[in-house]
Length: 145
Image (cartoon, rainbow, N blue to C red; front, side, top):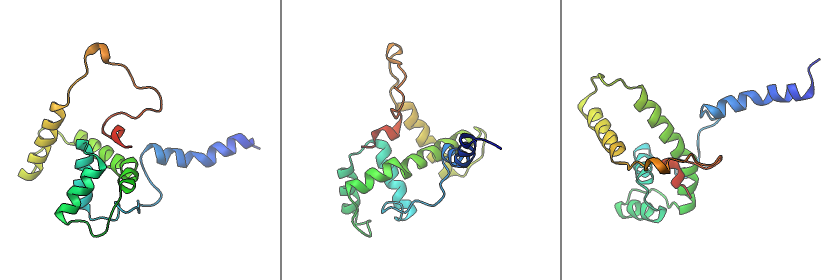
């Protein structure tokens, strides 16, 4: 008969596998997650650019696109969850598209814009290439406060 520790390991294994692959048992249901997808994508792009939460909310309110009010806390929660999922999905999608892929013009322009943004990102000097400490986020998602 297997030991208790082994049974606990087996019970937790599916949860670990799902979490490591970014799978969720239920869809996100926060205020930002309930917004229409085009609006969520605009928010994601503004987060990726590093805009402060107040500026994002002001931009959305000024455009009159928000069906209901959102707060800085709502954006912070989205940044730690849905935005990170979006960046992971975007990275996986970009990596899976071969260079010779004959995409429609709109998709080609979008990919060119993403590549231009990636090329503009400043590279740290060679002496500053220090790996982040364990538990410290890196990349665009590190801007989430």
